[in-house]
Amino acid sequence: MKILIPVKRVIDANVAVRVRADHTGVETANVKMSMNPFCEIAVEEAVRLKEAGKVTEIVAVSAGPAICQETLRTAMAMGADRGILIQTDETLQPLAIAKLLKAVAAKENPQIVMTGKQAIDGDHNQTGQMLAALLGWGQATFASKVELETDSVTVTREIDGGLETLKLKLPAVITTDLRLNEPRYASLPNIMAAKKKPVQTLTPADLGVDITPRYKVIRVSEPPKRKAGVKLQTVSDLVMKLRQEAKVI
Amino acid sequence: MPVLVIAEHDNSGIKASTLPTVTAAKKLSGDVHVLVAGSGSAAAAEDAAKLHSVSTVLHCDDKAYEHGLAENLALLIAKLAPGYSHIFAPASFFGKNVMPRAAALVDAQLISDITAIEGADTFTRPIYAGNAFETVQVSGDPVMVTVRMTAFDPAAQDGSGAIETIQGAGDTGLATFVGRELTKSARPDLATAKIVISGGRALGSGENFTKYLEPIADKLNAAIGASRAAVDAGYVPNDYQVGQTGKIVAPTLYIAVGISGAIQHLAGMKDSKVIVAINKDGDAPIFQVADYGLVGDLFQILPELDKALR
Image (cartoon, rainbow over all chains, first blue to last red):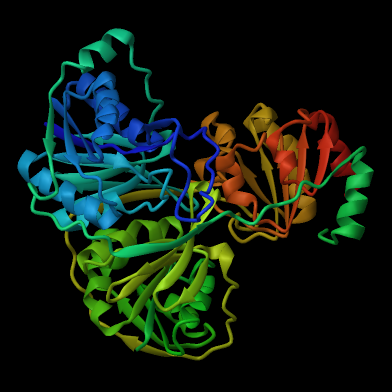
C-alpha cells in the first residue's frame, strides 16, 4: 500500500514571529524554518505503518520554492522513500495546494493521503479536507489514532467535547492532530542516506493546475498588546483585587 | 441575497458556537438563513428558529446527517450554495471539518477563523498563533468563512423564524460513524464559560487536577482547561486543551496555574478580560500577559485560594 504525505516548510514553532514594518507580511529573512510540526506527525505515522508492514511505500510531497527540497529531505531522513517537489515561487493558497495534490494523487494512486491538520503559519486548517472533496474520498480530520486494514481505515478523531471514531473506505484522506504520535529525530546515517533518495520536480503547469490566488492580503498587523499587570504578594491580595478592582468574582 | 449559517447542533438543540456565527452573518445581510441538518433534529430546528434575526431555518432531517459526517453535510451545503452570497459556520472542530470540504466542492477559497468583518468580501483573521492578523479580500461566489466564536457576541434567542423542510443530498457512503466518547462534566462548557481555571504540567498528575483545581472551579462555577503539556502527559482529556490548535477561549476571568505561557497556549486565551497567573517561575512568559500574578508553589497557593473563596 502506498501512502502520500504532503509536508509544508514553515517558520519554526519556537521563533517569535514579527510583523514587517510595511505591514505586508511577517519577517522571514534569517528566520529558522522547519517542517510544520503536524506534518512531522504525519510522516512519523506513515513510517510506523511501514515498519508494521502495512505500508510499502511512502512518498513525501511539498509545494513551494526550490528550498522546500530541504523539507522533503527531512521527511526522507525520517523514513519517506522518495519526494516530489511542486516547484513555484508564486503564493499558494489552500484550495490551490489541494488542486496540486489532487493532480499528484492522480499520478501516484496512493491508498492514503495523510497530512497535518493545519500549518502553523497560515493556521487555515483546510488543505486535507479540500483535497478529500476534490478526490471524492472520505476524510478523517484531527486524528489521534489510526488503525489501517487492507480496504478500510478506522480513525479516532479529536472533537469538541471528546473523541469520535470513524471508519473510512480506502482510499481516504487523514489529517493528524498532536496526540497521534511523537515524531522521531532523524539519525545522522539516515540524514546522509536521505540525500541519495530521489526527488522529482514538477511545476503547477506540468500538473495543469491554475494556482491563481483567490484572496489578496490587504494588510498584516500586530495583535493588540496586552500590558503586563502586577505581581501580588498574597492570596488574599489576589482575591481582594479580583473582587474589588477587576470585579470578576 | 440571504446569508446561510451552518448550525452546529446535537439533534436535541443547537450548540453555543452557532450563536456568535449568526451575529457575524447578520452584519452582512438582514436575511439570515440557518441550515439544521440532522436526524431526529426537530428540537434543534426549533432552537435555531428562535435566534435573533433568523428569517428561515432550512431543516433537513435524514439519517445521512445523524452524526454530522463531513462527506454528507458538505454535499448538502454545496447543493444549497447557489442561493447564497455568503455561507458562515463556526470555527469549531465541527466547522473546521466540514467547511473546507464544502468550499472545495463549490470551488471557493474558504476564509478560516475570522475575528472581524470589514466588508462583504473583506475579513480579518489571526495567523501564526495570533502573533499577527491578516486582513484579506476574497473573490468568490459564494464567500465562505468560519467564525471565531469568541470574536462575536452570541445572538439573542428572541426570534421566530420560519422552519422550512428541505430534501437531503444523499449519503456518500464514504465514511461510517463508529462511536463517540464525550467527556462528561457538570461544569460550564470550556469554550463559553465566564471563568476558566487551567492547569499545566506543574500540576504533576490528573489526581492533582481533581484535588487542587476542582474545588476552586466549583466555587467559581468555572470550566477547567489545560495546557498542551498537561494533556500530552495524560492528566486530562484532549478536549481540555486551550491553545492555537485546541480551544480558543475568552472568559471574563482566566486563571493559569503552573502554565509557563508558550505562544501556542497564549494564542488560546490572551483575549480573556482578566488573566491571573500562578507560577513558581517569576520569569515565566505567562506573567507578561497576566493582569495579576502570584509567584510561588501552586500546591500551597491553591489550597489558600480555595479557603479565601469560601
